[in-house]
Length: 147
Image 1 (cartoon, rainbow, N blue to C red):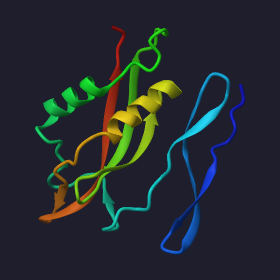
Image 2 (image 1 turned 120 degrees about the vertical axis):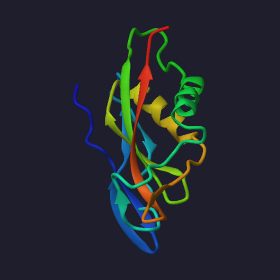
Image 3 (image 1 turned 90 degrees about the vertical axis):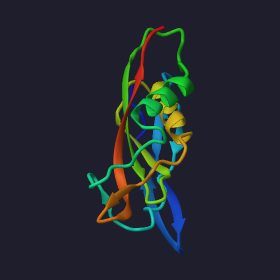
C-alpha cells in the first residue's frame, strides 16, 4: 500500500511563515490525519541531549510508569498487537512536555495513543545545566501488552 508523503503545514511564527512536516498516522485504508503539529522551538534556544541534572517526572520514575499505565488505553482491543512505541519529547525550561516525535513506531493507532498520553503529562522538574533550567530531549518508551 502506498501512503502519501508527509504533509507540509504552513506555520506562522513571529510574522515568519515556514513549512514544517506534520506528524501523521495512517490507518489500514491509507487515510491519514494530523496527530500533532511541531511547535515553535522552545524559548531559550538550544536543546540538550544530556545535562548535569536530567528532568524529573513529579514523584520520580515509578510515578511516571504508573501515570502511563493508568492513562494508556488499548487503541485496538480486537487485535493481538503488543510492543513498544518510543517517543522523543522536549522537556522545556519550564518543565512542559513539548514536541512529541515518534522514534520507534508500532502501528499508527498505538503511536497516536502514546502521543495522547504523553501530551496529558503534568509539568516536570526541568533539567539543569550550570545551575540554569534548560530544554532537554527525553525519550519515553510506551509499552503495550496484551491483557
